[in-house]
Amino acid sequence: MPKMSCGNPILRIAGMSHQYGDNPVLRGISLDVVENEFLTILGPSGSGKSTLLRVIAGLEFPQVVEVMQLAGNDVIGVPANRRNVSTVFQHHALFPHMSVGENVEYGLRLRGIRPEQRRVRASMMLDLVRLTDKYNVSVQHLSGGERQRVAIARSLAIEPEILLLDEPLGSLDEKLRGEMQLELIQLRKNTGKTFILVTHSQEEAITMSDRIVLMRSGRFDQIGSPSDLFDHPQTLFAARFMGVENIIEGKLKSIDSEYATIETASAQLTGRALPNLTGSRPGDRAFLAARAENVRMVKFSQLAQNTLRGTTAAPVYKGRYRDIPVQTEAGVLTVRQWDETHLTHEVTVTLMPDKCVVGSVAS
Image 1 (cartoon, rainbow, N blue to C red):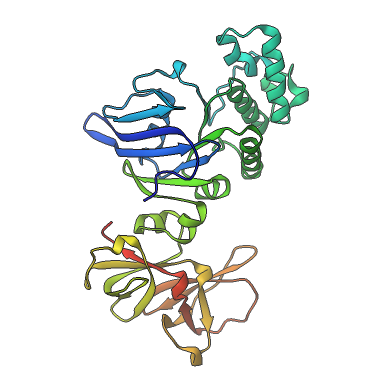
Image 2 (cartoon, helix red, strand yellow):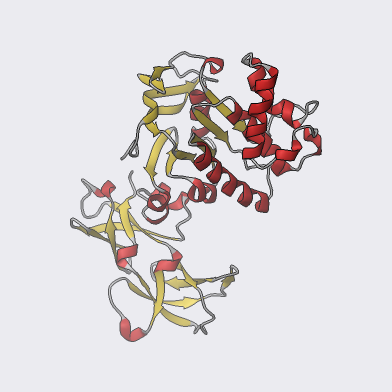
């Protein structure tokens, strides 16, 4: 499993473990993050993602760590105020009694920067986040999206090596979240900084990231590009967490260098073999995963590999498409339909083998 994409590493972590009492929250973490990368740490509550961010920020110290370097410097045991990183939190953490400009200048003032230099730098950051005319406005008079942009400007003002984003869009409504996602993508490009985002939202991770780290129970379950995790989940957990609509469990029937076949009580289904099948044998528990758009309705005369007979239930309207539940001998499958084709009660569906993946349940 890859740890680093191409480029110079700005952050290096190896052999990191951490626990609270008897509860391990990070288990043998190793990760390289490169300059100008937008990396997202994704996972459910309790997976360890927020703890990992706090460790990177210097707000917590792991019990075990072999390597932890920031911009080539050893930061093991180095506290937050001596690490050149900055964190943007979900609830902004702005000072309500200060103006926008004073909030943005705050970190610079702590570093002893002269007032005239602080104002120039703060003004540049407000230009960057499109709040040029808000310098003297009270933060209490800003919208939620504007407050978040002030928090980002304050964090960027100190010129950190890495900007840490701790679920920064969680308190915004859906429209504002979409707008801020685009803002963050553009900010990363304009500043050339490395961004590390923590979120439980698959949609945020897929939209903004160059690379995603999916965490489960203190470990990395899968690391890859957004398309890797969306189209090619490597484990049953990854398939479920990334929202793959059709997951069928059974027993491994056969495997070769490219494809694998599972069998259920009444069907045999084939897809691309995942690396986690290495060492598996026929009879071992396995799964097949297919997204709804890769399950098609076909004519009965087109019966072929991965084809099942079934009956339809009421379509679920999703705006631009409909999701149609189909009861088959392998269970209920979801078929995504983009047009208004008339549905018959009895249908035949096929799961496209090239678009399905087959993996081991055990991993």
